[in-house]
Length: 369
Ligand SMILES: Cc1cc2nc3c(=O)[nH]c(=O)nc-3n(C[C@H](O)[C@H](O)[C@H](O)COP(=O)(O)O)c2cc1C
Image 1: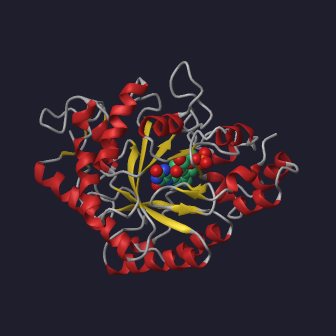
Image 2: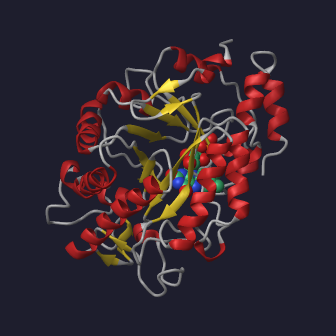
């Protein structure tokens, strides 16, 4: 069995230094009434920092655009009140010895009219589609695109100003940025549509604008995924070469760290190699990479039957993860559900080192929601 010590080595990710290799994955909570993170939100993140997580990536928090929000009671990332709430979160996490990045989000066509704020505003997306071939929303104009790019840049500047250690751009899971990447939802015939390089233009403009707003030294994390909530089997890149072109364009625009969202971290990304998506991202770009997906669990968070039964997961060994760390395949692992269930996941793992992990994990999962 590999030793969990490997997860507790400090790491220097260029512009971001962490005390260990464990990040908290971004997880939407819908517990911010009025879109303002309150004291309960502060406590929630403080407990995970006290529990030993090196880097917290917050739940998705929406930028200042009329169609950016998609669900009730999600925190905003603009306005005096919401930013004051976020500042308390940052201060609490820092006091507990952790680091923190907000996940900046625009849901695109996933939005339905009626969600506040935004009222009757329809979902905005490259071609008005959340699902391939089904127009349910508004196809973005150049003005809309410019407004959203500016909103991401403003949010990033605000994140830096209130003390966050980095920002993460949500470019995954079939939300707005990914709706541009994915040919299923991007049918544009202007310079934002066409091949994957053209479909990346929107994301590249956002990264460039964010970089200009935060300066050279502030870390930009970019989360992407092959899979979409609209289609788990969807893929942006079929070969390592395509993935390299896709990611290196983002790196050239200013991305420092890639957060590679998979549902099961142990799955090889391409035939002929055991490397997972994060392993390939790191190898192809030379940039640090974060892996994620069912760490410590035997079932992923989006079952094929669509039940989203989080309780169905059982504990699983960490051996495969530790072996990949020892091979230096990626730099950091993000943990989602296990950290909802147990805020002390990291500390318990450190203290229970290599004694009886399976028994420990079973105990830990008793608390799973
Ligand atoms: C309740 C819940 C909410 C989530 N919300 C987000 C989100 O806001 N942004 C995001 O990029 N991923 C979100 N995810 C996906 C997680 O970040 C993570 O990739 C996924 O849960 C797999 O990690 P796990 O198997 O360790 O839970 C969410 C997952 C769950 C379970």
